Image (cartoon, rainbow, N blue to C red):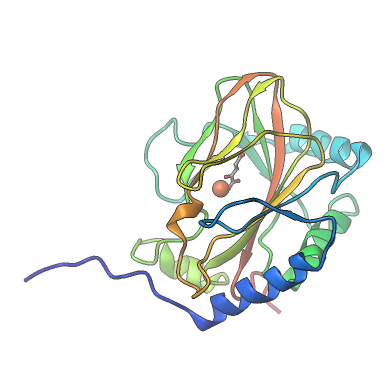
Length: 224
Ligand SMILES: O=C(O)CCC(=O)C(=O)O
Ligand SMILES: [Fe+2]
C-alpha cells in the first residue's frame, strides 16, 4: 500500500476571497504591490500614526506572554512574546475594523488580533500562515472558521537592527517601519495554499520589535 501526499486542493471559495481582496487593493492608491510573480504582497506605509502605534505597544507590553505555535515542537521556533488584543476594546476596535475594511472583508472572518514583541535574539522561524489540512489540529481549525486566507500585519516601531520579515522563496525582505502595514494572500489564484508565502520573522539584533498580526479565515471566526 502506498501513502501519497494529498495534492493541495483548489477551492472556489478561497479563490473568490483572493480575487475580491485583490480588486479592492488594486483600487486603493495608497496600497503598493510588491514586485513578485510568486506571492501577492502589498504595502501600505503609515497605515497607523505614531500615537496609534504607541498605544498598541503599551498594550502589548502590559499583556505579553511567551508565544505558541500549532505544531512545531522545536523550542526556538517562535521565541517572541504574544498577546491577544481585545477586539471590543475602544483602543483596538478602530484598528481592527480599519484592517478589515481595507481588505474589504467582513470583520467576522478576522481572528483575534495578536500583538507580538521580539527582544534581541528572538525570532519567528520560517513558516506558512495557512493551516495544513493533514495535521491533527485541522478539525479544530475547521470548526473555528476554516482555512486562513489573507494575513495583515503592522509594524509598530522601528527596530535598530534585524527583525525583517523575509519571504525566502519569493525573494522579498521587508524591514520594520513604524505604521507600515503588509498584507498578503496565503492562497494561489485557484484557492490552493501558496507554499511560496513561507516567511520568517528574522531575529532582532538590536532594539525591540513590536507588531500586530491579523489572520483572516474563509469562514466565520466570530460565531453569531
Ligand atoms: O515577525 C514577523 O515579521 C512575522 C510575523 C509572522 O509571520 C506572523 O505573525 O504570522
Ligand atoms: Fe506568519
